[in-house]
Image (cartoon, rainbow, N blue to C red; front, side, top):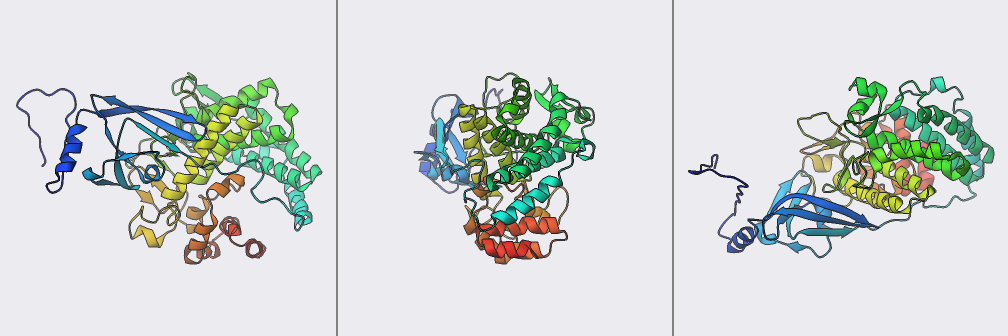
Length: 450
């Protein structure tokens, strides 16, 4: 059928359904739901439970297609399997009947330190390494990156060095890294850096002044690309500073930091200054990095690990500033982001049948997930180490939610070892090698010491 004609005027919705064969049960289910049209939904997060109340126009219970990550988690679903399944870029969708969806995320332990306690075996060597890293942090602010993304990464690295030094008992290194992080961050909070952050009253967000005037600078930051990536690094660094130096958190500094976190991590639908979780998609279960730029394949996200880092940073920041309800919201979103990343970006991790051949079998990750396709590439190059590595950075305790032993064991000999060995640069090779630590720490230590 290519056309539909009506002899009279039509107002409202027109609904069509294709029923293969002569399935009376499918016809009955579709007819029963014919007046119930979903036009939106209200979302709530309580502890680790997500609720979607579908807004329905018309009478009856709607039929709504559920993605694979819904199917494995929905509480007491009413499946309408008689109407069949529907293919999507994220796998087969199964139909659920009802006006409300509820599911619960299983929260894994998570804090500032990693899941494996530091032992004395390598403590002395670690103290030497972290001391060298701390000494290399520049005092001259002029040599630091001037855009929000790369500056945020540098700032978070200094904060991470301070946290590792503190855990290892290297107090001088901790204090030096902490001093550098505080000094670096101050101009960005005061608005005296080269491209100050400003509030955009049109789209209700914090953007760089340079990005506001030129949509192509700062990775499109002024048009809301990658905001959770950028400000997630700021949030992580701020949380680390406040943990190690609570006195640094004056009211004025906290007010400024709150704005950065609220830009991407606002948990209140009643906040008129910022949207609710700007980048996060409650139906797809993960964030989108695309801002206001139109693409033929619609929205996309490349780095799942940086998205996870964003909500991890917001979770730690809310925790250390005693905003417990916000911390609980961020923790639930973080866990869902990690679960969908493992399902839709990792092949043969939580699911083995999302993507068909030839993609499945040839690759173990998705480089960029779009609304309507998957790409084995990145926005900055086609090298395999980029494609795998961008799903691993930054290395923080939150990565334990994403990189699981069973998955790395499955893909190491088939894909990952060759990717590391073939890397054109040492830094990307080490990023890939480090993932093997969840399988064999001594072997990983040998590889990165080559």
